[in-house]
Image (cartoon, rainbow, N blue to C red; front, side, top):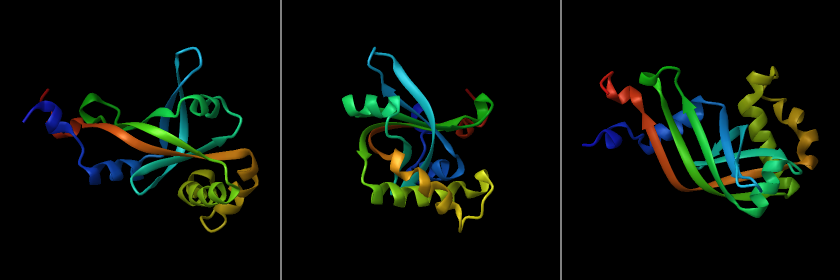
Length: 155
């Protein structure tokens, strides 16, 4: 077995990584050819990463031109602890207020503790932002994963 194969995450381990972490770095293709990378809060839905952002943001403009994005979710502070998933995805931009509102409620519940509110009231905190936001659905095309903990200190 190659080192590459040895450190790959299994599908259930990718879901665990998504559940344990709270920030995804999403890179879109900028107009001038440079990657545009931004941190986003996210929710995992059926193995897909969903996030939201302001409808007039640069990342939305980029994704309207070219729906390809790379989503990075990673953890670990030392080389021996590093693990992550880099997901090359096609992005669907959802503008329907009902879809965005449903997503906002899920996001609020997931991040309630982080924003200092009770999970039962968290959806209300995000609701006023729905008219200015879009939901981003990242549909995986290719995924690369790694977990250096599986190397047990041998490189």
